[in-house]
Structures are given as structure tokens and as C-alpha cells.
Image 1: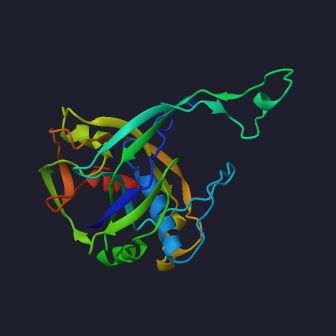
Image 2: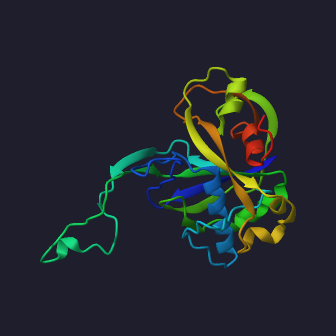
Image 3: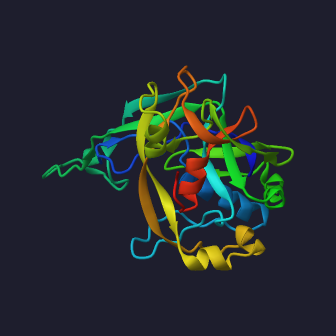
Length: 275
């Protein structure tokens, strides 16, 4: 297995909304989910090819999805080592509609104000480290062309891809006790580590690939403006080990000593058995 290490510079505070969630409390993950990173990198690929990136308006009947082809596995992005990161919660109160003008009228017959009363969380990070994997080193070389591009990242925020590994990193499969560089499926963690303190638990989603997506995507698909063929989303529970925690799980990893990618996460995102 090969991977690239990506350095992403946030331009402002970020929100990666936790779903399902409350409409009154918009909570964020403290990292970039794999699905979000996949969409971000696909848009950078389109920008590098001189294409217009798709609008983000919602089409509830048939929403187009633009993500990396299945031969690339986006593993998420996480606050870089020895850098500041934290989740800030604030109140977002005010009128829901931009056209609201009741308060500026000379005479008000009835106040039908529609207030927003919810709280909002932001991830504040100075730098994010992301990973994208592939079984082919050659397939990953194209990501060098995306360096310097940026676009919307998550529900709120903007990111710029500032650095890409000079060359694909070879990862060897081994069972070791190490700090995972990414999230990992909770069931795989408990299967190998009955008691592991120090991890946070989150509900996430992966893509359900259609057979046409896996079988028909060719080399040009990455930089094309054609939507990706995805059948839907599959929920899963993930464990996240913040770098401040000293406890480490023993797992089956793809590793080169510093980067430790759980094999179970690779298999899960590919739609295979995670163990």
C-alpha cells in the first residue's frame, strides 16, 4: 500500500457537521472526515485542470457527488503535530432571512420575526495533515499538480493544499502497538483491544460504491466535471485518538514507522470487510 501525506492550511475556522445532529446545536468533528477530504481533493483536481468547480446548492432529489475515484482512498485530515487546534462553541443569533426588515419599519403591526437561536461549533487549527492511499504509487503522482490550490472545505471554512509528499510513501503491513494517524473503525478496535482508554467516539459515513463506479472510472475521471457514481452512504462508528493521549492500541497497520494507517479503515472505505 502507498500513501501521500498532505498539508492543508485552513484560511479560517472550520465546521464539519456531525450527523445526525440537532438543528439547534451544530457540532463539528475535530478533524476532516474521509468523505469531506475526498470531495475537497476532487475539486482541487478540477481546478488544476482549469474546470469550474460545482456549486454546493442542494438538490434533494438527485444530488450530484464529486469525489475521488474508488482507486484513491481519502483517509481524512487531522490537526498537525505540535500545532494548535481546538473546538470553539459560540451562539449564532439573529434573523434567519436576509430580507428581514421589521425592525427598521416606522410602524410594526405584528412582529413575525424568525430568529436563529442555535449554537455553532468551529474547529480552529493552524494546520491539518491529511492522507490519501492507493495500491499504486504511480496513481498518486498526479496529486503533485494540486499543490497551491484551495477551495471550500466542509460546511464552513476554506483550505489550501500547501504541501504534498515528494513521492508516494510505501507502507508495510504489520501488527504493532502505535498511535493511529487516522480514525479507525470502533469494532475493529474492540476486537483487538478490549480496553483502550483515551479515544473519542464518533458516528461517520462512508460511500457505498456502485459497480459502475468501480468498473468504469478511467484515468480522466479524476479531473473531469462528471459526477461520481455513488449509490449512497453507509454509517459506521469510529474511534479517534487525539495526539495528547498516551494510550495506543495494538492493531493491524499499514506503517512506515511514523505514519500508521489502520488496515481496517482502508478495507472499510473500500467497501470490504473491515477486519
